[in-house]
Amino acid sequence: MDVTAVIFDLDGVIVTTDEYHYLAWSRMAEQEGIPFNREVNNRLRGISRMESLDIIVEQAERAYTDVEKTQLAEQKNGYYRQYLNGLTERDLLPGVMRTLHELKRRGIQIAIGSSSKNTPLILRQVGLETAFDAVADGNEIANSKPHPEVFLLAAEKLGANPASCLVVEDAEAGIDAALRAGMRAAAIGEACRCGRAHLRLTKIDDVLEYVGSR
Image (cartoon, rainbow, N blue to C red; front, side, top):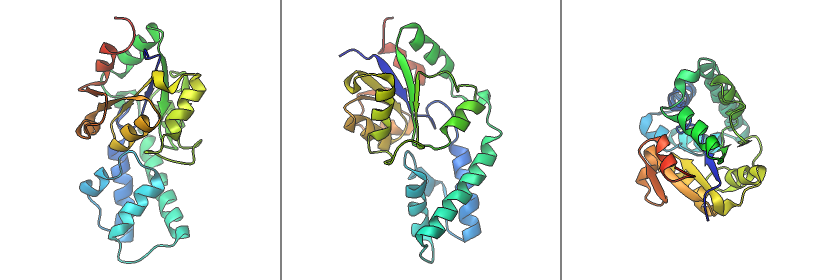
């Protein structure tokens, strides 16, 4: 079946916010005296805030209650949102605008499928709040990636058959979510290492080689 819709992850695909996540988690962990580094941070790609926190507190000297973990997650998110206030169109990854414009020109629907609850803020900060035909994010789902819920929701909002959707992801959990949704998966960045994607992209506009008319 031809691809009629492309669903993009947000962080690491459309915009780069990885460093902001790292800085926010580092700040929280330092205040709690929990060891944290970039190696641990890499394990957090594509998963929810609470799942990320569970990984971080593995290194803690004491156990945290569910209430305490909720408070820590909110604290981290507060720091992260502070950093996001400095986000601008300059933080869009190379080739994003060309790719989105060309897909629309070819009649391909485009959507965001992100586990981030900060998706509306990020899209607004970089000037893309009205660029997509549909947005599905962490505010609307009960299960984060690798569960397929967010991608299936994006397809539903588009009115698209999952089998006709291509997902662009930079995280292994996102690739697995796309495959579980019955969609095709295009890996970019770190996700290229997992080996399960249908396509591997060296840059985002490579997707134009595979989708729609030339």
